Amino acid sequence: MPLYDVLGKTTDPRSWELQREISSRTSADEKAPDFVFLAHVVDVMSAMHSPFVFRSFSSTPFSNRLFLLPLWPFTFLVMIVMWLKSKTFLFSFYILRGKVHQTWVVPRFGFQYFLPFAAEGINKQIEEAILMADRIGVKVISLAALNKNEGLNGGGTLFVNKLPDLKVRVVHGNTLTAAVILNDIPRDVDEVFLTGATSKLGRAIALYLSRRRVRVLMLTQSTERFLKVQSEAPIDCQQFLVQVTKYQAAKHCKTWIIGKWATPREQSWAPSGTHIHQFVVPPVIPFRRDCTYGKLAAMRLPKDVEGLGSCEYTMGRGVVHACHAGGVVHFLEGWTHHEVGAINVDQIDTVWKAALKHGLKPL
Image 1 (cartoon, rainbow, N blue to C red):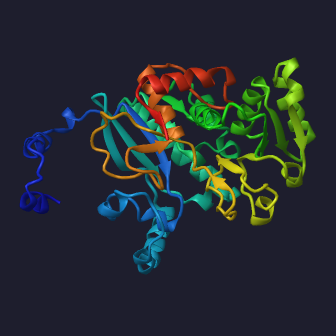
Image 2 (image 1 turned 90 degrees about the horizontal axis):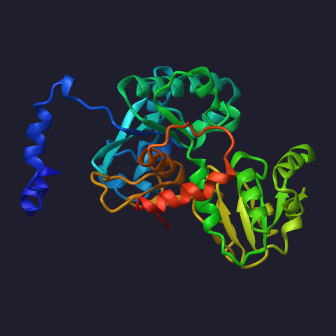
Image 3 (image 1 turned 90 degrees about the vertical axis):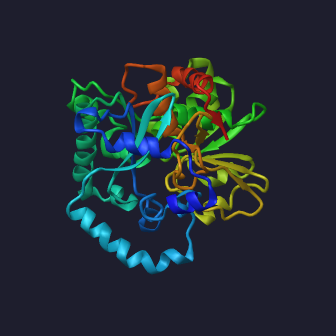
């Protein structure tokens, strides 16, 4: 809003100099971002939270507003066009430690990721984005929640196996996500109830907690998958992993970790005073007034970040999802491995310490 800045005398003194510098650039002067976070649209309403739609709206955490309702039909039509001819596009960028970090968006909406016939097309778009990042010299590309869905591409493994000569590092960021959740659990907790227990994140959380001698009630109907996870724990820790098949088993447990959507009836089994951590996308609706609900794992970026004028979905300004932060840490540390597939439980503490070292902070 340059006019308002001029009238209110709030113009940044560097603005015109920066404008002249940018305007004089040629294509040969353009520099690729060092880090890219590959996001996706959640739903039609949140699509209007993009900075290029309502800049003032996107500068605050997303929430459903009445003024968005009249625009819903038009946005839905735009969504249809995006399905027919969709390309990855730039969402926003910021500068950290003098390096450019960008957010690119795969123009697919959340529900599409759960349509079996859409999987091939979505993976193709993600692959194109990775190849583009590799071609222009990006060092690390981090995949947002559904872009690394296990059933879709094995947490990014599909692309790394298919494209063995990639220079760009592909990162799912789930190691830091697990670290954020685990460090949010009080040290005096001796029992937790875990859903989504055999998923990528659920497995890592269960194994880590078992090493801390915390009893983990793992909700899963598959004994085979439970035994597979249990067998990965040290022999003296396996007794702390317990399979349960119903929510009723957690009626006396006051620490829940939700990795799978929970209905009001399922949440009703939580005893009063329960705190519910979660890593399910989209997050569960807080039906219980006598329980507390944690938000999705996130971290606050360092104070020297510049140019971050929009909020990442429901997060506050300067706060990003943990998988985004995980990619940032991967880049800042200069790690040369891909972080895809199963989470390396031994790396959880390493990644957590690296994040704190670089100035990222838990909420």
